[in-house]
Image (tube, rainbow, N blue to C red):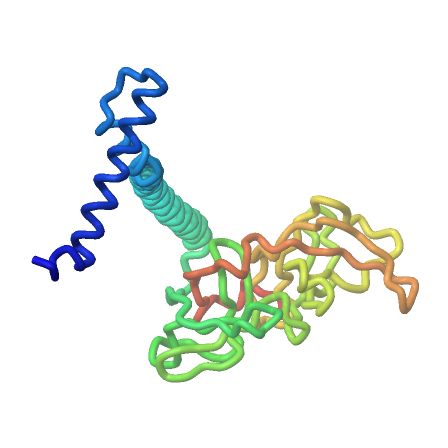
Length: 282
């Protein structure tokens, strides 16, 4: 028994009883309607209760916010998915639209020139470092393709076959400074030559060079192949004049030609592998 009275457990019990007695005395003195037990318990445990309440409120707040954020993120995810689907549909639509334009103009060209022989090609590779947007097509010598063949998008010539391999070819576009072809303005019939230009290529354009001082070429003029060498047929469209400027190195002027299509986005085109040279001028 003596060991019990000396133990820590007994001392703890005595301390609790003492707190209760103090509470009863304070309660009696102040005349509170609360019982002594409730006052002491409240006095002892109120700080812990406050802390517990704060923690509970914080957990509930975090839980609500987390729930709201999750729902918000879910809605954002759904909207992003819808936007992605719409963008994909739009890309498909634009691709189909371009293909429709390509085939429509091609059929018109074919009807006007039944002696033309074409091979349809699909772009299979591009050189991202090439400023002139050259590309590879999936047709080569096994399909009758040869170096020098014109490459068309609809009625517009967009380049020439620079290299031909058995099952693919490399196309040099009209923007390349190595590209050059005789050309004329359809109203005045003035014959010049069209060629690529490194500076103009940055804007996706090329030039009609060495214009006369009294040239009739002006904004909106339509430029076509002249077929002088016989390497290209006459009357293939090259593009439309967007501006006429003075050369810096001499007194001549030149016209800036805008191609009939965006060469960066071409995905399919036609290679003219044969034509009646009577359409060209020797």
